[in-house]
Each structure stands twice: as C-alpha cells, then as structure tokens.
Image 1: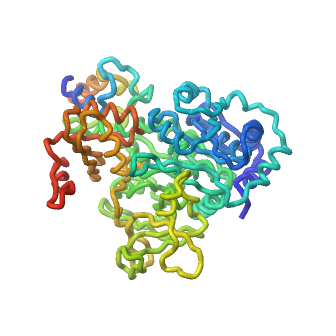
Image 2: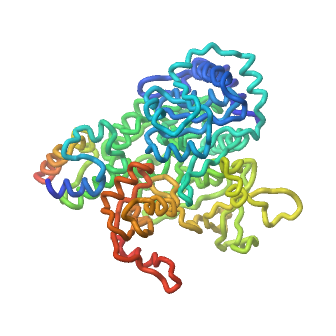
Length: 75
Length: 501
C-alpha cells in the first residue's frame, strides 16, 4: 500500500488519495492520468491490468486500486 | 462560397429541421431547435453588444455550448470560448487579452465566472434561452458580417507566458470545413463523436461539419476516455461513423487494450491530428478495423486547424512514419530556408502556408501578429501574407510532405501545443525556484522541469495545478544544485537529457 501511495502522490501531489472515494466518477483523475498510472502499476507490481479492470469501481479510491492489485497478483 | 457560417446554419435549419444536430447523454437538439436557440441567444446579445465585438463563452460539454457560440455570431459578434475547468489564473490571463464586455456562461460555471477578474456583464445562458427572436434585428446583424469578419478567437500557449488568441474568419473556417469534409466524404448520414474540449481548435470539425453537411455530433463525456470499454459502448450505442480526434485520444483505447473487449462497429472514418501518430497504436486500430478510412492531418491553429492531410492506404508497422501529405484544397504550402530562399526538392525547410485560411492574427497583439504573418519573401510584386509555422518539413519524390519536428522549443504533449518557455516562465514565478529549464521526453511523454532553489517538487506541482491547464503540469521534477551550462553560458540541454529515464 505504501508503494501505491508513493506512486499516486508522485503522479498527482494535489490529490488527497487517503480520503477520496470518487477519483474517476468525479473526474479527479483524467484519462491521461489513468494511462500513466496503469503503466506504472503494471511495471511496479508485475501485473497486467486489462481493459475490463478499467472501471470506475476499481480506481475510485486508493483502497480499491490496492484491492485490484492484490487480486491480479493472485491470478 | 457563402458569406458567413450563418448562411450555412440557415440552410441546414431549413433542410434538416427535424434531424438531430447535436446530442449529449442528457439532451439533444434538432437543427431547427438549435437554430431557434441561436436566434434567442443572438437576439438577447444583440441588445447589449456592438456588432464586431468579442463575447466570451464559458460553458460545459453539452449541446447548448455550440448554440452559445452561434448565438454570439447571430448577434454580429465573434466568440472566445474558455474551458471553465481551467485554473482561474489561466482564465484571467485570457480575459486580460480579450477584454470582452460580455461573458456568456452556463449555470454550472456561474460561480467560477464570478470569481474572475471580469468587470463586464455576466449573462447566464439558461436565463436567455427563451428570448423571443427579433428577426429584423438578427437580419441586420447578419448583413453586417462579411466573409473576412472574425468568427472566433481560440487561445493557445505563448512563449512569453501569456496565451495568444488566434483570430479566425468565417471564410477561413468554411474553407477548411469544405476541404476536410470532402476528404472524409462527410454527409448527412454521418454521426461524429466529439472528443476535443469545445473551446479547443480541434472541436471546430465537430461543430461545423454538422452545420455544413447535415451530419450529427455526439458530445462524448470526458470521463469515458478513462474507461475505454465504456467509450466503445458509447460509440456503438450512438452509431458513430466518424471521429476527428487528437492523436492522444486515438492512442488511449489502443494503449488501454479496449479492442480486446469490443470495437466500434459503425466507424467508417477516423482522422487524427495534433501530434505525430505513433504507428504501433494506429496498427492496432487498423488490425481491428481494416475498412476504416484513416487520415493523418497536420497544421497549426494559425492556418485554421489543418493544412495538409495524408490518407493512410498502407498497412502500417510499429516503426512506420506517416507523411503529413499534401495541402488541403485552397491551401498553399511551401518550404523556405533559414535565409528566406526556396528550399530545394528533397531538402528540409520551414513549412510555410498561405491562402484564404490564414488567421487574422493574434488578438490585441499587433507586434506579434506582424512578426508571425509576414510578406512572402519570394514575392516583391504584390501583398501576399504567409504564416511561417516554425515546423520543419521536406517534400519526398511523390510530392508528399514529411514532418521533421520543430525549429524552436514548442512541443506537442497530450494533443496540446505547449511552449516550453511558458512552462519556465511559470516556474520562475514560484517562490523557491531560482532557475529552471523545461524539456520534453517524447518517447515517454514526460514533461520535465529541472530547477534550482529550495522549493519542493510538491510545491511546484501544486502551484502549476492551480495556475495552468492540466496538460501543462510537469510530470517529472528534478532539483539540482546548479543547471549545467555550455561554454557560452547557455543551459546545456543535452546533459539535462541524460536524466530522462
């Protein structure tokens, strides 16, 4: 989780990732943030985020992203 | 050609009265309804403006925004669109250049508008939408427009730190729309999917192709670009046939693997512009949609969006470099050497453009206009203005133009044009930044800022987020004790580039 928070903070230091729960739904992260983020998460956690994973529920909060990472690592 | 876009709107409203012109997820407007709305807005605005004056429009991604634009035109004015999601500092910079007496906003942007440095009259769109049309007044305003009258002013990055407002005339816009419409064979059966922000130059196709050819435009919500499968569902649900997108927008679904799940079933034409297309992404589109017409476009805002095009007939590979092709109809494109002599066939020179598509200049900036739009140095006999694009190119043996990058420090990042000098000017204003240099790592699409001083990278990013559009925020910040210099004292950019990873 620390590593994830570090990546998120570097990507968007202006966003409160501890508390935000509608990052996508509210448009806080835009499509270019998502492209950059998916690339970094794939590299850092050795996972492959598929298009079907790219739904708001998986990216609306740091917690949801972490759950997705853990799920993909188990596969 | 018609005298103004209003002639086209009048004709479309008559011919396609009950056909849909613009649609978003919540609303849709027929040509008839759209036209009536422009008349209501136009009548109200005509009552409070002088013909030929600017109207700032700050309104969201919905069908009423193009109606506000054309409403301003019906009042005999021209419009300057602003994206209300941009930081307040940026919006104030634009207002300080355009100095408009009137700002037209939708309710959602009223609060932002009230916080700006604006002394003029704020008009809320929702309040004037049912103004009864005064046909006499509108007719007299329409008669005052000639084809060289300004239609809109669109702002783009300026190296001095203040955005430049490029002024486009009715004639220029119609010339471009006719040319691109012909290449894409747009007709009244087409449905366009709008990706570009409506205040941005790329949106002119989505606004004026419908008005000219009776096509329809669906305004795609911004959020869907972050959710590629949803994006393709929308393209299918709306039966979208034509996309005029930025290269960055075309890359997105390919990068995020959207084709693994579905594909846009109705798509027939895709034209892209804004930056160089990396063919590894175009290849994914071609493999999945082999029958689509792919068109690569090139050109600056100063020459009305695009001045050359290339129809991609070949199957591309990862390392294919697409030509930017040949001039659109009614555009003249040629190359000049540094010393203003004609460039020899096959050699590289600066791309220059002329024709009825030349912008009227930069709003309120005669000095910069005169520097950029110059007398053709090859012509001593009559007045012939050209625009030197600052882009380098060469003509290959088939007469196709090849693109070779910039002469100066302008870059294309996420589909937007950015002067690195403007990034530096912005950074230098931040407390704790002594000196800085901005560079672009193109393969990774990372905007770098190297700086000296004790500001933290967080301070800098937060400051940029507050003052600049999102696409102008540096992604990678490197704090150095001293910027490396060359023997002549200039910053050594090659050494800085070794920090790219």
